[in-house]
Amino acid sequence: KAQLPEFFIERLTKKGDAVHDPFMGRGTTPIQAALMERKAFGNDINPLSIILTRPRMRTVNAQEVSNALKSINFKNGEILRKDLLAFYHKKTLIGLEALKKWLNINAPLSKKNPNPIADWIRMVAINRLSGHSPGFFSGRSMPPNQAVSIKAQQKINIKLGLNPPAKDIEALINRKTNSLLKKGWFPRKANFSLHVGSATHTPKIKNSSIDLVVTSPPFLDIVDYAADNWLRCWFAGIDPSNVNISAHKTKEDWTEMVHNVLK
Image (tube, rainbow, N blue to C red; front, side, top):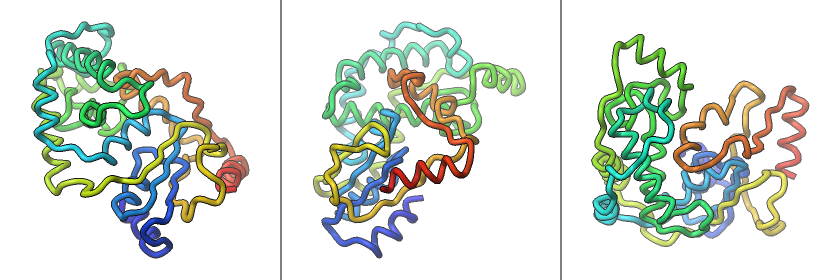
């Protein structure tokens, strides 16, 4: 919850200080730090973290998002993975493939500072890929915010006796955008620096430049991050086999890892 980093940032730093999360995940700590006018630093081994965090650090408005979505031909996709029909109606999957093509042009992963509107649309789309309510692109899938396997989703479909319904991708992204922006967003330019790589080696962050670290380190070996995020990685164009997410088997190994990161 954002209230957790807020608690420590409020008490242990002042405006202009630097706050860092070496395991930023969805970006809760750096986003909260930026909202509180601190310098926001973040790092994660998975490039997915940056594309979930960076768009929420930059000012966009709902009309710009709507205009960009109108320019996309959602009928121009090609189904490359038929197994994903376990999650999506054929028309929805074609639309997602069309959106992927548009994003590869307008917000390629290789670009460090892509178009903010395209960056935002990708972030919202990734968070709408699968879930339990009509607001997601998929048919009913559990749990939300992480993807089950193809086989598990097929079992869910059989158990419920349902096939994934067609979804209006443009309308769902617009609806979520309006919800996220209803209270406005950053009133000023956020001061942030986000990085991909090992948490123990962040050479782009200057020595002695961080005033506070607030983080939630990875669990021991009870969470499979690659398995949980495979669908998001598919949409983003990330090969999870190339993301070296470590799993620590013992408390001693985990403690040593955290010690090295903080050091």
